[in-house]
Image 1 (cartoon, rainbow, N blue to C red):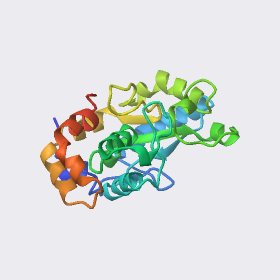
Image 2 (image 1 turned 90 degrees about the horizontal axis):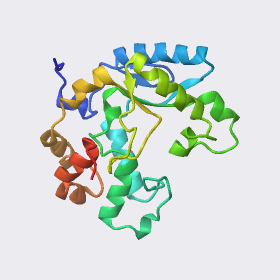
Image 3 (image 1 turned 135 degrees about the vertical axis):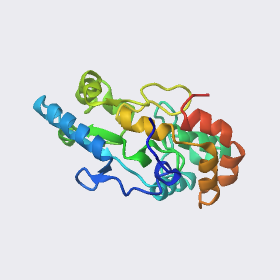
Length: 227
């Protein structure tokens, strides 16, 4: 049975039920317990499993989106190649942003069920700069051992990768984990009507382009059903 999750909760506008998982990272209490157990198991296997990002509010996601829309942050294609923001139309820029970053109100990070992880010790010993891109979780990357460990162990603790493959929407994110049981309740609470209302009331840049294409964008990127 789906728990009573309000629109404000799944939209990232309320987080009163979340708890500190260390270093300011907020998680749902059930997810914190599961992650802590998984982290301990990883450490016993020589993997320094740590959180890069967990809960993000609607306002934080809005700031990320607007920064990318203004060209103040790097845009990449689905293969991780850097794009020239100035050469993109509004529609192309929107799709480039949504390949890697959710619209405010649409991020799974709003729920306290999802987190981005890395191998802190391996990254510290690595010579390159760490940018949270797929290559860092592939052979020769600092987090490849972690990626392999997660593949064999995360399900034991209730986690899965919601973006394990590119369906033509969100790019592959081997670092992004979700706690399946708790996240399912949030997934089932979403509605395009409440989402549209939150966007209309926000200070999001490119709002007209987003709202004009919202049903398509909602299916492709929010539900991640692909193009």
